[in-house]
Amino acid sequence: MLIAPDTQSLAGGIAFRAATRADDAGLRNLLRENEIPGAVSVTLEREPSFFHATEIEGDRHQLLVACDVNGEIIASGARASRVLFVNGQEQRVGYLGQLRIARAHRKRRGLLFEGYAALRQLRGDDGMPFDITSIMADNDVAMRLLTRGLRGLPRYAPIARVVTLVIPTRGRAKVEAARDIEIVPGSTESLPEIADCLQRNLRRFQFAPRWTSEDLRDPARCRGLIPGDFLLAQRGGQVVGCVAIWNQRAFKQVVVRGYSPWVRRLRPFLNAASPWLSVPHLPAPGMSLEHAFLSHVAIDGDDGRIFHSLVARARETAHMRGLSALLCGLTEGNPMLAGLRALFGKHALTNVLHSVDWGEGQAALAALDSRPVHVEVAVL
Image (tube, rainbow, N blue to C red):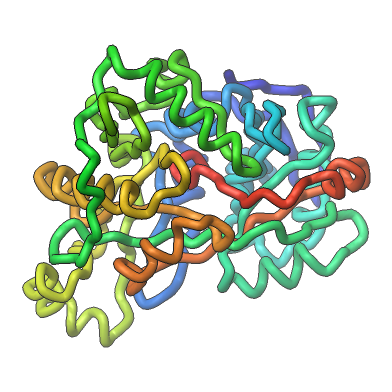
């Protein structure tokens, strides 16, 4: 559900307002302009509709845009909320995302401060008295700016480091499989069992999403995900673990915009040797990465053998579907990360999950217990 509050303010001729479906083209253009530099430079895009992707982020979604005097969108910011597990209880929590500023306007400090003032108005009494967000660990500019406690900005405090492993679908891996486990595909009939497995295991983590069987059936909340995309680990006919291969490329893409000189020279050889080097295929500039998320990870007892058995089958299935990589996000406090990192730790992205608090959430943050954090990177 897209919520469009009447929020409007001015900062040096810039107008802030709630986004509408008519802003779709402008928002997609803003994403194409925000390139993430690196050895492989990419843009995070949402084609053919910006709003298709917002529906998986939460059942409530609020989106602001900043426009110049010509009506062109030069910045955006969003707050999505959904029910997560906090201290083992179901709580609604907001997530701040889609914070983008057009390149030509990034030095306008007033734009940032006015934008955060507008975002604060979106909160109201919707859920916990703080929000969460993630920042790329190597984004030094954002880290310095947002975590230094500037007046007029909310307080950002680190919660956990989230490691997203890039798991190639080709190449061998020494996986210690669970011999007493049978891996079977999901089905419509198994959705209640999948939801039970997700809820009993994700409840053990902070900020993990609550998934019901109704959520899993919802074509908007789980766009592009069908029951057959789940893999179930069964012992004696009982589901003891699950993962899903969530291919979102029909509505969310990671598009390669360029390579550093050395990667550009080596790309043909890396692609030719990818099955032996266990590296994902590197597409030509302008093409999207051939990946899916390894999502909905829930394993009874955090048993690494069960998890690795599911990952091994997921790699085989993803390869048969023409995918070159699976992205799996786990926090450094997750007991299953070390084993998976030992197998597939060559390529990883690290984000830092932060709480975002305007002064009302300190007591709630202090009350968080010590259970490990887990966030579903596929919906961020």
